[in-house]
Image (cartoon, rainbow, N blue to C red):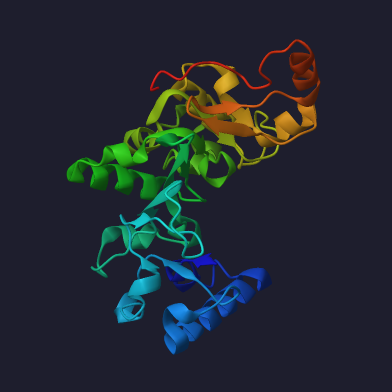
Length: 288
């Protein structure tokens, strides 16, 4: 179980926890108690990894199961295989209670953001996957500013990114579409943070079909901005439900020494196999 205490701490009267979230938080607390009792001797079903430190020293004694912001996740269920690493980029912990960004923080802006590096065929870093949860524009702006200052903007590079908050407009802009329409402006820092795709990168929106003037999320203006990040190449922007409606299957990638490549739908796979050719899209990746 991976869990972030900050997500639950930033719940409020306006952003209440649902019953499932309350159950998750309760189970996380139980597993932390078990760790404090038995340490690393805890077994499957009792293990937990804490993503991000909590305030008032509440996680100071959890070093063996704590990943602080900017640190690497190198083990899954305490096994280090070398095939996967994850760089924890958020939630951001604020030492200063007067930090102005705290006024903008709510549950979505406490989302876990992780950039995974996946190995394949004995080669490291063949797929960089950026997962941004539901983080909003204020967090992406802060991430870009922080990583620019630290010289670590490469931590935001990706081959595949899942658009935060189901392709929401509020991930890319402080402006309200309902008030300004096409006059809205994209936050340049947030766009920079989410625009660090490597050559041939793919943007995946996990959401219902994206329609103009539909409820946000998803948002058609956000889709347009993401398309601009991939050179208007519609094959490199995928909406999961649109793919399912068209192909009756989920979005799927195969990761090899060539990098991540989207698999073809079943009918094409059968035809390709019969012809004796690969059943996977074979566009070469520029980064090797």
